[in-house]
View (cartoon, rainbow, N blue to C red):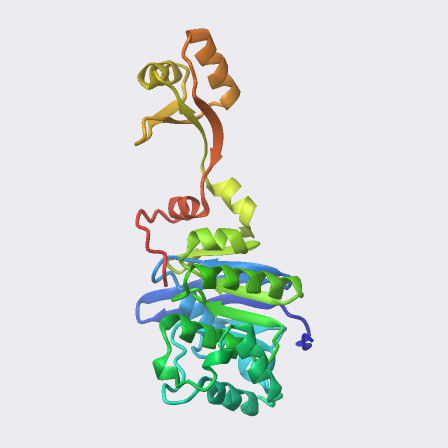
Length: 308
């Protein structure tokens, strides 16, 4: 059962945080609604973790507000029953067992003891309930963090890099978990540097870069507005076709595998041009850029590290 919080919306208004002359969060305003998985994307140092820390009352903003269901996190009497949080810096006592750690959290938030066993089963750690946390692998530690986030059956989940340390099976399990949480009407905000995985799970995106909000939109709209759509062509005569396309004002580029990637012209027009010139085609398809390509294009980040 999902507990009431007034509503389940995360509302960030003009949120700002500076450290000296460095503006880490520069006036963010966005809304995270229930019933969807919202991906929080930004390169290292973009301000994601700082924003999440302010949302969870761990860092005080210089200006603005971050509320959950119309209330600041610090105003929640039993926060684990309203917000399930997982931060990369969350490190439980390594000498405790997994069950004892969760039991302590349950007791401090007046959560029924039976929930400990339920969430351990949900995250696949039933067999490790009595093991000390210090013996856990990185992936097991992440599952335990997710168990703690789910302990109060909260209507809101705020998860920072939840897939970190999980193997391929664990990542697929996490994807299904997040989708099921959203399908139940919960509000799910999740940051991740795994762009392919984010493209498979997120309905909505919040994209930030260097302390600025770049986009708040649906996944498909984000790629359509900011991504690249091009025509992929393979032919036994790529150089000849390249010349013909360039003369028509298109922008062909020779791909590493010998094919052509063509901007500025539709596939049907390429087909007609090739037929008229007697150039055989082996492949002709319209491609859309991936989430990672679109993100890197928008942020101007040519590297692959989008973590932080």
